[in-house]
Length: 179
Length: 208
Image (tube, rainbow over all chains, first blue to last red):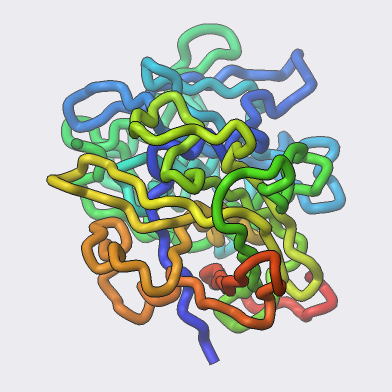
């Protein structure tokens, strides 16, 4: 017998009270290969969202997701609340490629959840890497109209530094997924 | 508030990215844990307990639950909460628990007060506790709110009623429970949480 899943409710304006201890802005201890991913969450008026939470989940450099046994080495998990300017910042490593549902490989990517007051459920999206040849054959990117693919691909802003803005609504709206 | 996407969501087949997810251990968390009443806050002491299950009724084991709530006067310990109700120096409103091998969890806390939120004229949130769960995979993430049975404000609350399906909405309301009520100490409320499943073929119990 299937049970009915408990429905989502908004995270509300005060999630910082309960959701701070598991925040992780720095995913890696290895400074050599570390990259900074920085961006803003913007609403339909282009205004920064100062009360959002963003979570990321990614594979390690070899394209493996951490299992419970491996959590000490690379946990692949990050979470921060946006600041007053709607900004978030993670320090992490570029993940390797992971398999798709069929025999194809996915391009390196981060999965992201975005939660905030005013949204009943989280928004699910992905961030891909610029100058990555594998993007051209990525099975998920291939599901998306070419004029919107760019919303999922970060922009280089310097050595080891990427910028990725999430636009919630309207012009340049980021692609969001239904799982 | 222009926060909801206007474009349709794109259906994403679940891949290893969505079928795995972050795991936490008690060492990742400190603080009041599952007893939010340790410092003796004012209010009606309650025990909120239940099981975390997947859609097939299997327990979700050793998974973390983050919880936050207003105090008995309906005030959150948060700089953005301007409600003119007293803070309680003995209550942070923040806790966490891990499920056991049967998916059971248990919080000791106080019943939160109703809370005005200015969404419309005379807008009051019913008493509620926020819960955040990760479950075994990225796809099983859940953030929700638990309500108390018989709350007169439920039928007027746009957030509770944003869940269209009545049966699903009923899942958000805890049940008064004699079994977990402790004489002379605290009322018990039962709240089972069902995480959505993944499309993955179920694993053997022993492999979980």
